[in-house]
Image (cartoon, rainbow, N blue to C red; front, side):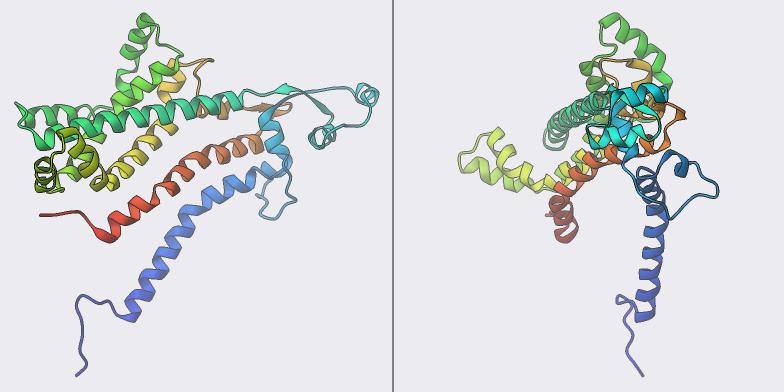
Length: 313
């Protein structure tokens, strides 16, 4: 009679599980791959029916994303002489010329400032609040934690009009500071609850030993608690950045020019002949890069949390 392990899956189970994981990865990656591919299509290939899977790649979508163009009669194009740059050559074949830079770079820069600014503020405030709730006797702690959590129970867009009126009175409309404060307020409850759970798992004896060795409370927090909570901080930062980076409704309502982020701008990209889908796809592809890079940079802490597990007494 062969031995059978309940904990160890059989070879067939591993094969089925691996196949399901690969299938799920392929299905979820397909829309992303299609967006990336559309960014390298010509406008005609992007709207072709049936959709083209095999096509001649071009960077016309990226050129259109970063430039503004206008159509000119052929005789005026001939009078301008041959194109001087590779990107002029790309747009000239469609009978248009480049008249200047688009606003995408500025909108992308706004997204970087607002997204990473609100994430950093959330982590600083959330870590401090979570540490206080975890280590000190705070009056009405459970009630305060429930109140913090209750701010996530209502969709943020439900309070859009009061926030719009408040921002207009305070002069925060269409400003970087306004969106940073708003996104921080929305994400703060999530960061407090996530980080409190991680800090609760760190034995308080570590800090007590540090205090006995002559550390101050802040030094014990900085040199003992923070390194142990790095996994939770990394996870929380990723969640906060994803929300602030992709947020659309408040960005549309509260910004118009100076502080407008990329999500409201990308769908409005119009070419000389209507909606420029390759440029929209190119913008979406570039917009994915910072969050992807941020997640990769923090993967060491995430993987350490998976491999080593939580610290327990």
